[in-house]
Image 1 (cartoon, rainbow, N blue to C red):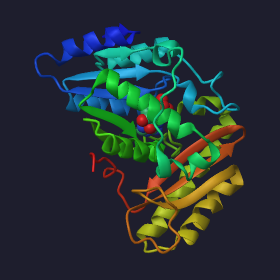
Image 2 (tube, protein in one colour):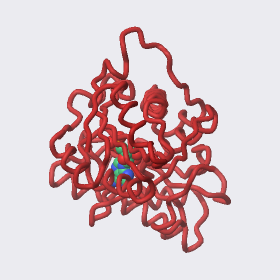
Image 3 (cartoon, rainbow, N blue to C red):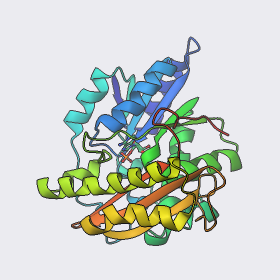
Length: 290
Ligand code: AMP
């Protein structure tokens, strides 16, 4: 596995990997890697001849009062995981490499970025879209892998790829969970043991609503109420909504199209997000660009 820190080195290393016609798979991350990231990497190594992973805690996607300064890091552990998993190239840029002095051009994701997390994290998806666009231009991957856990992010990135004609296929990988249902997240490191147990109520709420959906319930407000029965007692809820899977807009009428139940909630001072695609089996979440 090769470690590179500059864009120039990265471009040369990717060019070498591409020689011989290898497909390039790309997994962008903010590090503190866990089994969720590993699942993305596994998909990439299975489908591509070479896999590039980036670790970059992107400052432009954090709000002024968010956790940028204390975001968990473990470079050594991350390197070991990537090495074990057969990653070919690990890109570890510093902030000035990505945002040189005078940087001023951004990608504005528009309507998809407005509801849900966009409402509570102004500018977040602009930061995400901008950094992912830049990373796509640097790596020029054939396939790029993202987790369903960040569902709105996957919608924003798919839209950007279509709107800006980026020659990359976006693959969404199902959410990896702990045995109790809690979606793996680097931010789970902030939770105490007791909070971690409580946090399982979030996925339990989502699963209860999904079970009702499978049994025929189609009213968004009843599905949301069912989820909140479990989520509200254990957390402070920011949002919990049924949304159209394509455009992320809240569905106010009975669900008649692919939809997801999405939530963000604070357990103690830790903000967690999670979602389920309604009625979709756990092995059906992956799909290509479209
Ligand atoms: P992050 O390092 O949190 O920015 O995440 C990097 C990528 O890993 C994103 O595409 C996430 O959606 C994905 N990811 C994070 N947690 C999980 C999980 N529990 N299951 C699957 N993918 C995940």
